[in-house]
Image 1 (cartoon, helix red, strand yellow):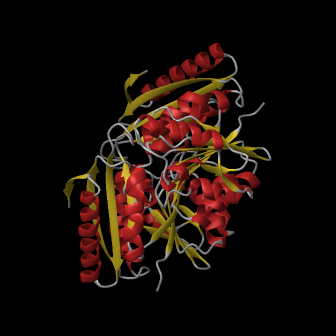
Image 2 (tube, each protein chain N blue to C red):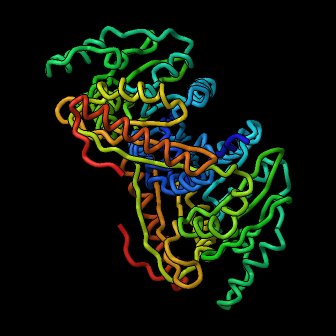
Length: 266
Length: 266
């Protein structure tokens, strides 16, 4: 079972106009990565029918295993993700009885009645299953088409995370292989990245399944500072850990031999 | 002249595995937005040939006016954006003489010779023009195909921003219409977003060219806190400002009439 593919869609004009940094995207990416998914794309999109419908359709056409969107589930006129999703699926947008009940109960507790804009949050593609929102109102949406599962979550980070923790994680866990990851970081100084490059390549020839990436933080010439990231994965927990440690040790030896300062390791 | 379309590509496994938040994407999105571009997508991608080549090709096929990528221009084995770009363009990857000179001069100043991995940073698609990097080594890359300009920038934020400020902004300014933007924020409390929705719709009927978006920050029922964003654009600076102020004033009046607390405005 190879790693299933995932796309993350971050829907909202505030993302593509740079008003906010897409922290929802990175939060979800980390969670999906740790669950064993390969996140192939994180796509930020405006609240725009053409862009969103096209992207959902594209994911289905490419057999992406899981698509998670955030944003556009609220009560205002530009919250249209549910409508766009119905269009992408070729399904009717209907008031989902289960979702309406969830919403109605929350407003009722505060003595508030259902209005057109509150009912709007219960409108979902016909085949959808609503996902409870433990901290807000708008439920998440779960649908599937061909081989693709699509999950639409609210855009407010606390709500998005709460829906994910409550139901989405469990759904995803059953779709991903059980893989173990061991991650290491080495902080390196006084060696330019261009001189580090052949050292990494040598190690990777010996350990072709390990992933190593250098993140330059200083200046290549004046003051080279590089954070080296090492990732080892295996279906056997012990093996993932052991290989990461071996690679780390060999890298540090080579680095010291080249005159680099290895500041710390974890 | 309508707003030209832009895509931003953030290339790097560290983005799609959620190791880092995509601040390059939002920085560029803000700059492009202020220059008069419509950013249609910010796409984070792994260091993966299939994904990156496909996305560059897709942008060209869709006649996106400007594509800006970040990441993958450095000296290590997984820095392959230039190679992927050449493939997407159907061009040879060659050592660009101008780029090589830029790189050679920087290393020479430190008494360092060119090595295979240093020369790698001068490899570009045949038609490329290198863009000087005032704070790092790897030059940016400028190419165009059909109606699409593609600019590849380094992934290190300081370098990306420096190349942008030095040459990219000037290139983009000539491609975008001169539009003026006026932005306003209103901080609203004690009214649920679902009750705010019809107020926004009423205002938008009167001012169809203005963009208003509500950003819920609190809890819809227990403690509603909403930041309202108002954007007005015009080719006439005075008009953009005037309309934003009118909309702001009318919104505040309506909000107070509905019992909301309007905490501040700027």
